[in-house]
Image (cartoon, rainbow over all chains, first blue to last red; front, side, top):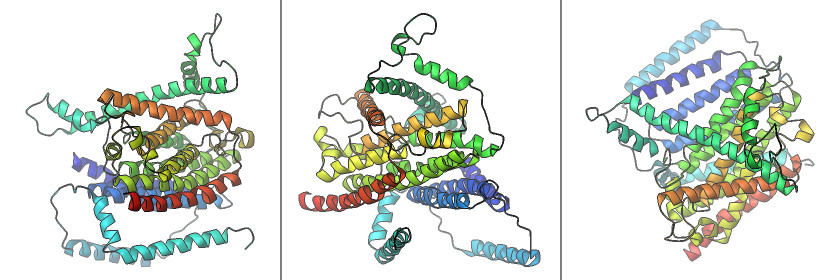
Length: 162
Length: 357
């Protein structure tokens, strides 16, 4: 049963991701991205990382995707947002893709994957929290300062009389 | 939780098999169907409640169904059924210039967003469809699906009122998610868990062990969460995305019939979800207000539902007593009042816990 679900989620992720890239209407791409993000969240659940799956939804779907759609709608031609892209530099692109494919295949095949038995951890949230506030305290605080800076910057930019 | 119990119960009929995907699918589908019927039934009750509450607030009697001929039952009890039938049989219009795929998809997306939130709401000690480790966080996360559905509904209608409505709702929901989330953080700080059932079990032992009365800061946090929750459901006084007198009907201007019914249903479902989170996080969920009495599982369902329905009633009460906020007032309240108070609350709860344990 878990196998079928995994393949279903993986198929949704890959197909919708292909749709994001190949579609030439931006809004449809954004909607397809929604399914990709949901699929990735589902894959996280398969890795027993339920907290990360939740974060994935909250940050990417609730924040970044909404921002993308907002951006599309603030453009002046919202009624027909089409990208008039043509395929250019096909030779170079193909070479890069083939190189990337071979490179990633080698990486995937050579990495010593952590083969854990399928045991559900008691609570991933507690472990994540402990690691964030003990082992990785400095990066965590640095990111907080960065986000605070971004917040202050946004507030400064949106002031009426700077 | 419920799914597991149902699955084990179903497996009991077939002693020879150890694992059966079909039975698992049945065990998942049955609670979902029950949930759908529950939401539909609840929506009928809520529509009737809204009609009556609005009538009484405005010194009217509301639907009464007197006289011969067109008759809406005793006290107008059949009025919501008539409303539902009207919505179902209405002609389904899709504007010519609309983006058909997204136009059709948006109402279902918003309903799915509300529907999947229901699976993590605990109705009783064992009556929860999925007892997730990250329950309350999951509820916050799936709430974001509604935003996208609303923007898409507004955009695909190809109507400027709809687009304005969609944009307004997105700005509003995203902004109010933050004070709501900050208030939920306080619940998580005190209980030390994200699991809905564990949060409720922490508040065992009567009215004064509920988190709303744990200390002054949680008392404030409850109100910040509840008001932000009302804003997230686009209810008056925060209904600027719909605002009939300003932008016609907002994101659902072009919707009619069945699709409009889905928006309607999701609004009521979202009210239920917000009230469910509020009563789980602050009002003790299915715990009885008197310690040691009325604590059986069926009383638990009663307490949970009555807490939720009371909060839904308060939302209706607000709707008919407060005027609508302006857009700038709305944003001021969120960013300049709720957010600083919410952050101070977190600080205060931390200090309070350090001093008074």
